[in-house]
Figure (cartoon, rainbow, N blue to C red):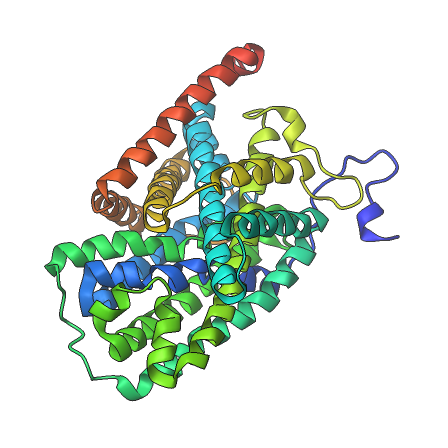
Length: 439
């Protein structure tokens, strides 16, 4: 019997468990390697100078520590809601709603901004309206996501191979120039390095979204933690080498003065035709990010709706395709609305604020759940523990607060605004379903 029809005969449709370690790891690498590295290298260089590799290192270490917490919780509670699910179990429905809200909005806003970046690259190469291309890209990505998670991640694998190839190309270009610049030169001192580290977290966003695929992964308690940590390690290694290579070729001043930093690196080293090659690769990269961010946002909506935090109709699964179809369509509608305009640096900062809140909630949840759910099997455990108490999540919480403090003030204000909207939405929905809130 075809896999997609197994639910027929009275069984409720469920998400299809079809992902293995390869698809899940490459999916994580794909969303991490997306538009962030291709678009934000110049903005990070403006803050950190030639020492921007230190900013990447800071962000990578933070991602690794936070990733360990996600890995334990994903192996313990393999649910599509991820951040929302963990926070709900530790702190209750209300706190979880705000966290889930911020993660959904952050992903949708980021997908919209990246769609505009795609439109910009496409327009520069072929001449087309940026907004029209952005909307068309969002629609196409939604259709792929609607068709099924396996089709989505195999599409992502193809795109990831191309974008990783582009990064390896940049590294190869830069190797002969290693040592040409002072890699400890920071134009704004340590303050700039810290600010660069906070911003560059946008380029690492994605590792945590591996956890949202838990209900669609075979043997999720084993596969998801491994895939998450592998994705972080692979991406961090590529990022560090790209940061050193791009700085070595251009220096921070020239790198921060262009809207297509990695394409400019290729042009400087090999000529104008190389610029076009990297610009095309950036199209694949941005398309990949859009696709996977929409998938992650739709799975979070599905996870929240399946526990009645959002209207239940959003948890509906398409009978044949076994995808959360209504949640996917909602993400498309909202993302098109945001795609009307966007400042990538500002949007990246606002997205980081939302994601940092989620990171903080997950690490705090891990600490609490070690005691409130002490007997729950944990196939993977965070290392460095004092009895039941995990040490690394405390370090992660401190680093999250530090990173948030180094975001741009406007990004913090936008993030706080989204936080306030989440509280309002939570109260409105609690009035709409008082009988469920009373449970």
